[in-house]
Length: 345
Image (cartoon, rainbow, N blue to C red; front, side):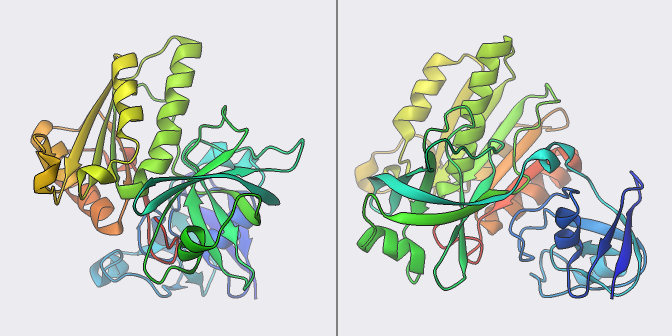
């Protein structure tokens, strides 16, 4: 049975088929709602049901609480309509013109940059390019029908190869394959681009990036794009990156980021270690990465924040930045790396 969905702010209308979630139907009909994990873990797609009823679906109970449900909130990646709906949510208009494609690709190069991180360079067929926005991700399509999601770490203008940062993860089928069996020239299939974690270029607000682990990958893409745009247009938004990892060795591309800091006056880098080793002789920041931001800023009311990494970090940053530092809710952009979104992130 088909139901009619109306987006309250824009009066955009689309239909949802039996069993489809609100998000699936919106994307199918060309309306890009914010989303990240697509499995009810990150909260990016949270919106309000103004009129109608939904099956809330399976989701993280901390991401959508019973109190929020009673207030009409829903996660649109999980919510299946039971009636016609009127919803309230943000729309991402710039994504809708980018076609999602399925393509073969070849493993061009593999570079192990840390004990548990492999950088993979993928080559598309001759005369093929994948149009994407800096910060988006792709799905690697597995032979068993499953998929594994990885953020693109290269900027759109530097697209000769698609760059992925794969973290080895115990029990992760694809991640373990990468570290044990994958070889250069292997053929993979991908689908993308996907996701709404990308640079909002219609703002000149200063940006705070918060990354944990390989959450650095999409941030790298966004920063390299921002530097490129800045050079082309003569603009220079202030940007600071807080990158949280366990030990010094986990800052697997620290030299690259330090070089950015030397080259660009509008960029500043704050590495944060949560489990520094005695051999690290670390004199820098320690603890949880988002708490370093809280220590440095009394107010975030004039900023944009882009947070990427573990769900725990992303949710803590969202809660504290909005609740304690007055960050406008619509200026927080995130991508939470969950086990089902990606084994390796």
